[in-house]
Image (cartoon, rainbow, N blue to C red; front, top):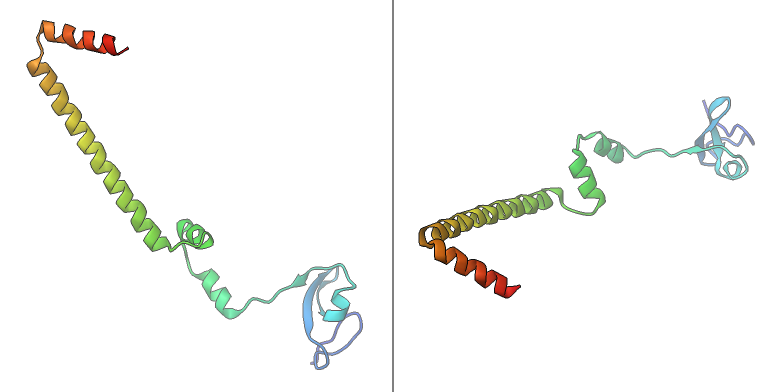
Length: 123
């Protein structure tokens, strides 16, 4: 069965036909008539794109792809940055603990007053 444009009845052998959505349902329309009617044209999807869209990707992977990033490489960099941040936090708490222990060991009643005097002098 040869399909034809629902408006001008040109067949698919003489013109490229597109699917369009009308009030009566999905119909075939030629390119020329598609400019004269106010209905949406259904764009056919290539099989490769369809297969790609059916592959399961995480939200992170899809957003990375849209942003033009390699999701695996970007994820690795973020993970490395988190490790470095955790290491710096651990170092900070260790240094803080050492300083507090040294202050307690070397302080006397006068030493605390001397530190307070120094801090007041800086203000």
